[in-house]
Length: 189
Image (cartoon, rainbow, N blue to C red):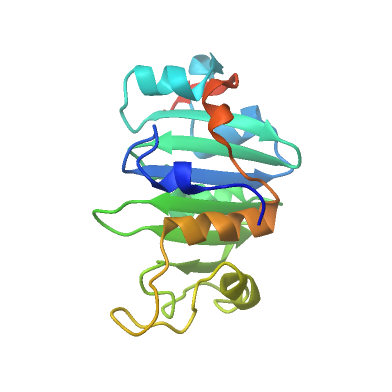
């Protein structure tokens, strides 16, 4: 994989709890509305401005990354809700990477409003969805052992591996430069 994801998982500016949602073929404005943003609050904003302001979980930003829109949420996990994810993945693909070291980190892959696979990197053998084994090859390439039991032999996967998996599926590698790119900010309704 090209690029270094360590800045995303080693105490970077988004803090301990964050959620990145990748939505294919949808512009940022549409993605914001699908996740539940109040249309009246949509405005240009950088991630740095978001981090310098109110860090309540209802503040989000979204940006265009070629074929994908990426939604950034700090201190929240709105896209991890099955209802919200169904809206985000309506007639497209959505991927959620949730970093929550105090509860449960998650990786969710949804297509056409259906959750295909959903798992916690600590216990990847417990996968859920309509086709929980759909990403086995990609998981192994991302150094996630899909059969590893918690506390079992081998290295446990973490958010770094989830970001590698997201990169494999989207082609997107987020660099620290993203902090100063003008995106669309909004407040969840």
